[in-house]
Length: 210
Image (cartoon, rainbow, N blue to C red):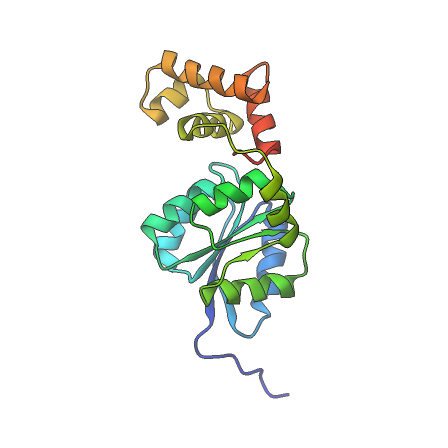
């Protein structure tokens, strides 16, 4: 049987997905597309930029929720560090607030993960052509959603809290004194209607604010 012809210039894709079994299956499915090559796979958000600097992908597919760092935060850094790489954010839930944040981070697409791989592959091709791809239901919901009331430092503090960081860890990461970090967390808790910082982090994620 003759070997399938593969175009000489494939779309180079970085895949950031958790857990590993899902990542492997998705990489295998995308790799079956004749014009797509998965050149890097990562399971943590804090590994994305370093791997992208080495692999130089054309498109990065980023799970919105990853250990170490969210896909949204990584997307914002990719925009600065690897500006030629287009970003598609993948989410398991339709969260309008996250769509707004994805746009702010420079993402070219925002899709719900339960769609067929053929649609995802076509989305990869579209963003590479300079198009923007957004799930229609998410776009409609985003127009009706309340704005994100959290400031950037509050979002960063809550994101780190969700990963298990202590106040001391947050103070070192944000380069702020611990009392200032506690004030940030208290303010964020008030805006989410939560009783403590961990509950605030969960509430903010549900609303797509992180």
